[in-house]
Length: 126
Ligand SMILES: C=C(N)C(=O)O
Image 1 (tube, rainbow, N blue to C red):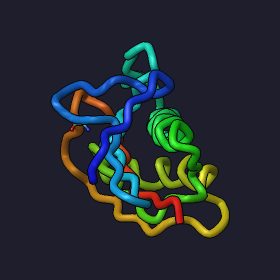
Image 2: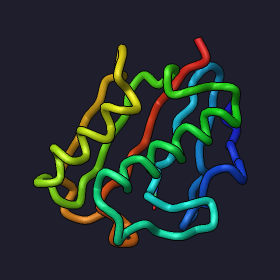
Image 3: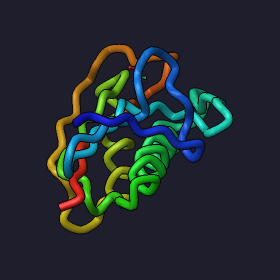
């Protein structure tokens, strides 16, 4: 049965979606923007810093269910500008330096709220 995840340790949704949903062993996060828990959008920061904030938010959601980034099977990354790929990739690699999850990264052309990057993850408790 589906259940929704909500934690104050990650930014609130900016629309009609849950921070994450879970069914059985599988947790799926919503796309995380570079928002702080106070709702501040780090759109003036570098793409590397924005990537860190997105992944900090993913990690906080996972941790609210006793999981960590090590439990991530797959991420999907939306870049406003695919030319930011190398800078994004450098920061991303600091979070997943061993046995990284599968990943898709696309140049989306635009990301909500004018962010440079949005990251979602699928994780499992298994
Ligand atoms: C930021 C989002 N995840 C959304 O608007 O769906």
